[in-house]
Length: 267
Image (tube, rainbow, N blue to C red; front, side):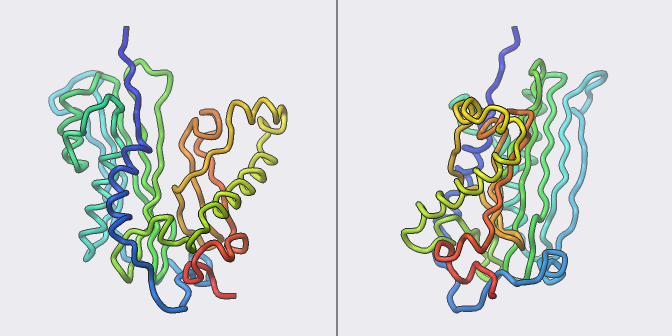
């Protein structure tokens, strides 16, 4: 009988990013908005320069059916701290919930560990892309996919990394919300969830049963976009696996008085 391993992507990602978020408690000063009114395609021209980092490796010396790892990521020339953070966060998103600490802290470290422990059909896909860019902010979307031999399907996870280009720091939810507005943020997220349910065929077919099986959950996994904050959920958090990874959009217009003015577009 195959021993199923339970991934703990979200907990692992939060564990690595939390100390960084605490370290960047100081928010930008001044009244200049860090969210330009231009669309993403225009603002990205002023964003940080990136280079692609892409490869696919199979277990060295293995023949036949072999475990493999794919990486499709980005590096930030001139900003080694951000490049290292992306690499570190991706490696942590491979965590397995078996109560033990991970013996690696980078993608290379994970690869070395993976070749020692992987079953023949095990597969890992790690990716990072810039979801939004402007002169002041860089949003990186980190994704992981792991398939374990014998499992019915693979498990995916996503984590946003919001980087302040000016301060060279990660921004957590507490750093962008006005003091005392966390409850209001959750209420705005609930409203976005209600709109998402209204467009979900499975939810509209039997709303009561769906709400019982897949109740709303708050989340601080947010990313800036040109339209508002996107909050993304992993599979099984608020919807079945067939729904993928749901995204809820909180328009900036709904975040007035909740998010600090410097993180809202100027009218």
